[in-house]
Image 1 (cartoon, one colour):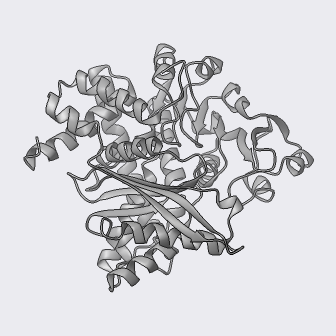
Image 2 (cartoon, helix red, strand yellow):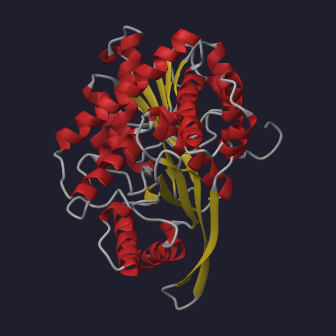
Amino acid sequence: MAGKAFNPFEMAQAQFDKVAEQIGLDEGTRELLRNPLRQFHFSIPVRMDDGTVKVFQGFRVQHNDARGPSKGGIRFHPQETVDTVKALATWMTWKCAVVDIPLGGGKGGVICDPHNLSMREQEQICRGWVRQMAKNVGPLNDVPAPDVMTNSQHMLWMLDEYEQISGYKAPGFITGKPVGMGGSLGRTEATGYGVIYTVREALKEKNIDPATTTASFQGFGNVAQYAIRLYNELGGTVVAVSSWDQGDQTSYTFRKTVGVNIDELLAVTDRFGGIDKAKAKELGYEVLEGGAWIEQDVDILIPAALENQVTGETSKKISDKVKIVAEGANGPTTPEADVELERRGIFVVPDFLANAGGVTCSYFEQVQCNMNYFWTREEVLTKLDEKMTTAFKAVSELSRKKKLYMRDAAYAISINRVAQACKDRGWC
């Protein structure tokens, strides 16, 4: 893919093709699984606060639902593309399968920038998205959730619109809702905690005490914030985080060799995870260029921002001290970078395993809504830990047994599970 624009869906297909060949998947099943079952492209007209009408482009991709209803977030992003959504939907299929929950992969998005939209305008986009998709989503066939730059308020607007259209209460239609309105305790922490549960297990296998380790994070949104908290509780030290500056339209790495103080940084962070550069300097943080997070002399790297961040070129900047890369983001590592990481013996916890805590807890929320019976935070996080730990051990065991790269082992488990469901249904 060098020499041309990055295409996340091509990357997802390349990862799939590699493992499909390794496990001897038949041609018909390969063709079925490497492409989405359904794609929706639509326009969302919105009357803006100034009285003008602006049309936003929306998407929903349902990659595969052989194992259960499609599941996946809806992201608002100015650089959203259908290829990004297709890739994310594909990865969601493998993510649900690797942690063995009865759901398939879906993903949605709207090309917009919430930074520049009022809450009323964002509400109209949410309701417009549901109006376009109401006949093709629902608690029994496709269950959305929050993603980049969407939150529990967006989900509640979408739920309200769906219930108005359908004429019945359907709290299981969407997850990531506010607690008290059908949301699950523990959901906010789930993705970040899930990343650290897998890091903890990887360190156990390497006989390394978490308290002796250091880490660097890319991103300072919800995933990174909660991952840092749990990692700190295990005794680990975060020396650097990167963050996007909306004013400068660029990213910076904030470094403190004595360790990042999460509460200190949160006090100078906006609701999108953007850290105020000037205030961080006042707090004693060294401000470096955005890509410096990957160059830090640490034990653990956690990319928790967007896709295509660990590339063939940037992977060469990774310190020889790094032992683990845990992918909190979706698709952060390109196939070229995988070659470099595997060559150097760096242990990679692949994205659709490492960050599966979010969809796992979304599944828990869906179950609770459908039962109309809700669990305590401790129950939710205990179940989450069990799911993530079981999945990690299965992937790691297969990796050792078959001498597979961790990403390939995770793919092998997921692809086999989905392929078997398709065969059992008579689809292939």
